[in-house]
Structures are given as C-alpha cells and as structure tokens.
Amino acid sequence: MTARTIIIGAGMGGLACAARLASAGHDVTVLEKEGWAGGKARQVAIDGAMVDAGPTVFTLRDVFDDIFQTAGRDLDDYVTVRPAEVLARHAWDADGQLDLFADPERSEDAIGAFAGGDAARGYCAFRKEAARIYGILENSMLRASKVSWPLPLMWRIGLWRVGDLLAIRPYESMWKVLGEHFADQRLRQLFARYSTYCGSSPFSTPATLMLIAHVEARGVWLIEGGMSAMADALRRLAEEKGARIRFGAKVSRIEVDRGRAWAVTLNTGERIAADAVVANADPAALADGRFGQAASGAVNAPRAKNRSLSAMVWLAHARTSGFPLSRHNVMFSPDYPREFAEIRDGRPPADPSVYVCAQDRDANGGPAPRGRERLQIIVNAPANGDTHSYTQQEMEQCTTAMMRSCARAGLMLEDPLPHSLATPNTFEGLFPSTGGALYGRASHGWAASFLRQGTRTRIAGLYCAGGSTHPGAGVPMAALSGGLAATAVAQDLALMRRFHKVVMPGGMSTQSATTGSTA
Image 1 (cartoon, rainbow, N blue to C red):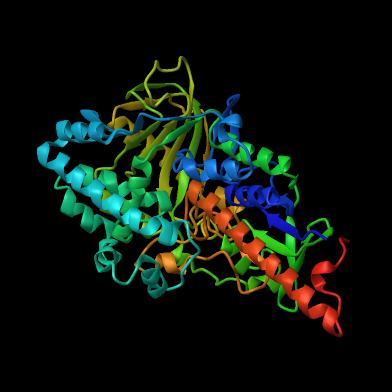
Image 2 (cartoon, rainbow, N blue to C red; image 1 turned 90 degrees about the vertical axis):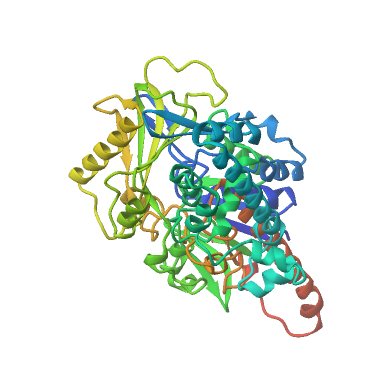
C-alpha cells in the first residue's frame, strides 16, 4: 500500500513539498483552510482590480526550475517569467533617486554618480563580501538540512577553512559592517534594508545576512500575474502528478499515538489517516495548540519578543504622480535608528520608510499606466496583532504618515486613497499565534539561524515546512523548506517500510496506527 502524506497548508512550502512527493509517486493530500493556493501569496479585489497582497520580489528562480524539472516539466510552460533590468528604485527626498540594476557594473556607475567614487568602490567591496558569504553558506546551510549548533556547520564548511568560518561575520551587526563599506549614510541605509527581507532589524541582525543582497543581485524576476501565478503553477504541477488539494479544509487536530502522528481531524469531524503529516504553518501555531494539544509538544514555543516584523500593508488602486515609479520602489525615512526603535517599542514608526510595488509598472522601462494603477504599499510594524487592536484612528494616522513619506520622495498618491489596509491584526487572523509576524522568528543575534525550527519535529511522522522554518523567510526559501520536508518524509517512510518488512514477519505483531482506515 502506498504511504499517505497529509500536508497542512497550501503555501509555497506546502505546494513545493506536494509537487516533489507526488512526482516521486507518493500519495499526497494538501488541506488548505482558505480558498486559494499560495498562503501569503494571495490577491485581494480593490476597486474592481485584483491586487497582489503578499510577497512581490521573486529571486532564486533556479529553486523553482528544479522543482519542475524533477517532475519532468518546464517552468516556462506554466508561467511567464522574465528578468528585471532594474532591481529597485530608491529615494530619500525629491532631489534624486538611485536605481540598482541586474548588471552590477550599471549599479556601480549609478552609485558613483549618486555618491562619488569612494561609494562606488565601497559597493564593489560590499558586493564581493556578500557574494563570498553566500558562497560559503549556500550548500552548507541554505540548501541543506538544519544544523542546531555552530560545530556541525563548521564541519560542513570544513574546519580547515578558517578564513571562511570567520568571513560569515556572525558576531557583528549588519549595520556596523555596512559602515565599513559606506560612509554615505543613505547607502548604508539602502543595503541595511535587506535585513527586512527576513523581518529583522539591521541593528540586531548579524552581518551574515548581507548575503541577501547577493541573492537579489543574482537576479530579480517579473512574473506575469504576480506571485499568486507562481503558486497556481505549483498547484497545477502537484495535481498533474497526482496530489489532491482540498480548499476550505481546516485541520483542527493532528492525531498522535505512541509518539507518532497518524491522522488529522478536520473541523467538520472528518478524520484522515496518514503515514506522515507536514505542517506548512508557522511553528507557533503548532506550539500554541492550534492543531491539538497532542501535537503542541512537537516544537519549541517561540517567545513573542523573538518574533519577526509584521507590517501595515495598503492595497490600493489609485492614481499617482510625481515620482517615476518602477516595479519595486523604496522611499527611506530620514532617521533609520528611530524607525526601528519605535517598532521595538511596539508601535508603527511615525516617519516610516515605505516600499511601493507598482504592479502595473515594468522594471525594464515603458510608459506609465493611464488612470489608476495597482499598488501594494508596505511599512514595517511590530508583530503585536494578538495583543493590540488597531483602532480606526491609528490606521488613519499610519496612512497619513505613509503618504507623507511618499510625498517627501516626490510621490503623490490619490487622496483620499482607494485602498484596503491590512494590519498586524489582519495577519494574526490569517496566520494565528504569530501576532502577525510575517517571517517567523527574527534573525537577531548570532544563534538565530540555529534556533529556527527545522524540518523534523519531536513527534515521529510530523514535519514542518514554510517560510517560518529552516532555511528561512522568502518565497524561494519556503520552497526549499518544502523540498527538505519532502526529502525527510521520503527517507523516513522508506526506513519505516524496511523496518516492517524485516521485523513484523518474525514474531508477534500488532496493527500499526499508520495503517488505520480513513473515518
């Protein structure tokens, strides 16, 4: 009998896991409580237009190419993806802007024109250091199973490579090390922003995370239809290979017997037997008993103080003027330390940096859209959605502060702004037990990567996947986590089958809980 795997959640990690397992011939069912595939990669209707409401920056395309190639398919047959020439457009005031390009020489020239020759040389040095860190950790950590302490990582890298061990700079903050490369505080702020890609403060994040800048420098890709189109491509691939995906199927309990997960129960009372269960959910939900008390001991209960950032997210369909928007745009605050201090103190920043994804703009040039355009506007916020209820007055104050920051950079938004605002309360509702944290555990301190939840849990047959588990936040990392979960499931089920073949025929045996029928 084919082993049965239940995947809870059709986020990127769950879909990647389903596609890989189904491609290998496993019996896979994905249970998703919402009505869409993609998890955070969702769309919301605003003023008659569908606006991407989740992640917008697509990097490490090779991760997805591999999923499709392993299934005997080609990603380009499922979704239209093309490289972006402009990675992002940045501004601090209305007097100028700075673009970073896919071509590093163009970026170097742009930085030199913006801040001088020393800044251009600092960028070259920074780029080399970020690339080296990525090269050291790519196969030893980012694409490999989690290690729980530095010594195993040192073994993977190679104890004789002392220079590489020191080069990842885990004991220095990103902000401090960036100061070695950039005297111009605007550039220091620009490259510090990459810490927010994993929901963290550059003042607390290890300089190791400078590797994120190299990930983006390797290429940003534009997806026709947005990130939800990529989620739909993974869904179709998984279903073509035999996986079943059920929407509106909320798991209320993971059944555990004799230390092993063996079934799940839906809120309707339906019970589905399984030989393996993959929780594509924030580990906090597991620890908090959202899937039953029996499964709550599978992972460590995270502390609220260790949560990553949440966000205030405006989904708008509005007219714009002034600033020449590209696809990805950042308007920086004049006081970065104050911004993160306010978030640390539990309140949205009064004078925030603002990210604007102009979804109808082409990063490779072209005319501006006529009339209204689709916008996703993000301001970092504390993950307090389970302890603080944002009032209408607070939301209006946040909207005013966001529009003021945009105007400082020259971007004028239609006023009043036709929009829907998602707060940390919204994200706590979508992703319970997180407080609205969008990236799991914050990457603060040298040990953060070792403390992130790994693929396997304390309960046999129960696994974790998603952007809150190893190797970390972001769409490609979530997909990698799904691949790690698929590998672990396949390995463990193969061992279980061999164990039963050797042991059970030789003497007295009892029915395994994993062979129970579906009720």
